[in-house]
Image 1 (tube, rainbow, N blue to C red):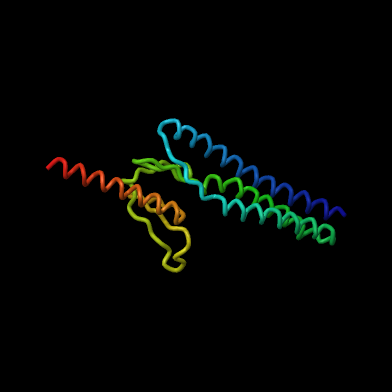
Image 2: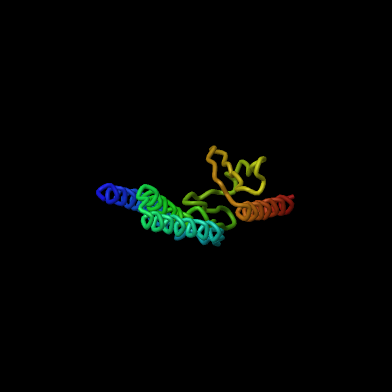
Length: 173
């Protein structure tokens, strides 16, 4: 019985620590995002729904497995289910950070980084998995995983900027 209590406490502590770390990361993100959003007006594009559904389902499955395993007196697997449920619950919270793009005419905010369109070096598609996330690379070398929807919005904004620039050059002639 002592082993069961130890494993349960271990699973709870690990799950709680992972959840607390995710909550701290999200609070820091939210604070920085609120400061950035006060400076300029941005349009919000939220593509986190699927991520949230997946992480919620995985959290529920892990906790259900833990309950089932405890009922079967399999304390090791139950403790792993609790810890893993905490990890997935934390990822559910962080999907708000990874799953939202704020954009306007001259820049966008992804995760908690403001990026000007002129800083974009390229957007690459994974050649082995073309439907997967794209990699946005800035001239400074920083890489971001973005969704296909984000890529579409960013490309639309880049095209608008190019059209404005062309119209301005034409006007100056």
